[in-house]
Length: 430
Image 1 (cartoon, rainbow, N blue to C red):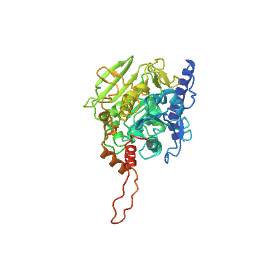
Image 2: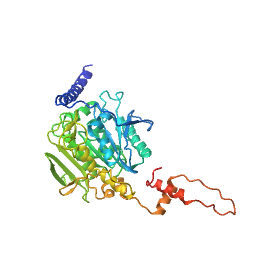
Image 3: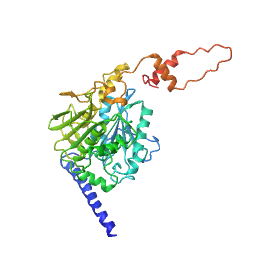
Image 4: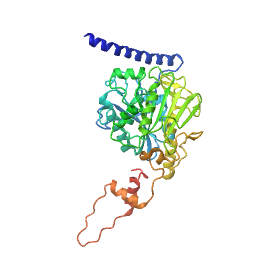
């Protein structure tokens, strides 16, 4: 009994610390006139998206005029949050309407975790083909099949426990995601129990870059190319130590085989940004150290140009919009403009906000195929008729017409075949 009590006491102390810090952050937000988020929902629930072994809810925002082969963003909320609150705070659905992409919001259920945290530290939920990780992958698969989004331009982001779960998805299903963004999160594989999770959040961990990278490399049988990664962390974060951001960076430097020394550094206002490029000069990793910010999503809600999201508990005014910057890094606006131009669509309602920084492009969007490797969507679809017809016959069911012996092959109208080919190529909606 003493042994059990001695084991439980440290865990209970860590839990109390965690809960006290969460409550203090909410009280501080209220004290400074930032009410808790009670948004009017812009999301709709999707059911029957798969076996859902992790028992998660799936909510989505799909713009009314979603272009064919648009990108897809998966956005994961933090502890004590809902999908609606995360959307309201970050502004992802508003940006989706402006740039033309869809957003999936997985939502945790209290039956799984009483604090509504994603189970980023539970072995049965962070392994490929199991639990919550598989549920989220099934959501992506369902969205791709149902909403005609581009399977090679799928991205994942999240805050805190959602950021740690985003790291899980990038490690366990790297072939699914072209990029990820981890905000105030933790590296993949740093915890496999509740106590280890709290220890990773509150204490410095000492693991080599090679060991951190091996955790990702062994999470699937994927051999590359790997997703590009954006890492965000406040320097005054008391809930998840900023050293976790450095571990995430070192984990993905190892995976990508990059130098530990950044290729590029700059100050964005008072915030530090570092970039690691590949041999071709494409940015594969970026990291923002947000000066003086506590635990939360950085916003620039006071700036009209970058206004996105709503300040509140864990959605913090920092003079820099992580939502906008992450979208730029993933080339979301650029990809949609390129696709719509190739398909002859009206570009007028779509904004492209790629910010060019000194020495390199913010999102390195000059060549989407190279920037995203095998996960990239073609910048301009091919219009070779033979390729289109071959694709149509491979992917769409065509009736076999009976031919009587000695009779000529019956005439087939080319119109339906051409229409089917265009649908198969993603240039016409079904």
